[in-house]
Length: 220
Image (cartoon, rainbow, N blue to C red; front, side, top):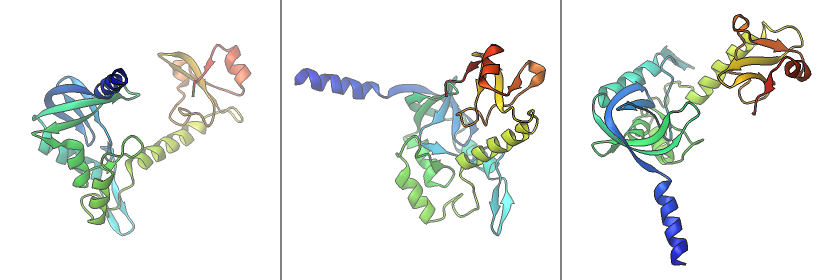
């Protein structure tokens, strides 16, 4: 029993790792450099830097730029202490960070500068609910949730790209560091993949055609 408890304690202790620590450089509302490490703050999602908000009677305004500037004014150049929880698909360190004992993510959510990113963590769920009830910051200002904004952008780019495909040929043959990979409609990376014929990328009308040309299927 003692051995089992010891193993459990070790697992809990190693599920999150201390560091990095260092001076902050703000990239956007939810991404910072801590020293030389690029950090994506856990559990928060801020408007994209180029995102505008408004509509339904609310004038359009540059909410993404406003959030970035506000976060930069508060944290740029200060020293952050972080706890690493994961690494995202872009290779960024996913962490919670504090400056002088203030949890950056919690401050952003409580002040309506970012939303709780419940897809990845529920740690700021209650903070967002309180901010929303009180119309703090972005709440009530005609903002589209950042995840929806990104999805809409990907869909629009995909439609533009799809318009260049030969009729009936919707399989995307993409060339990346992983080699020649083809993406089928409905797969995870399909909408975000653009075809650049000048780089040797191309459309395929069937999987058999793609395989015969030397492309392999995307894993998801």
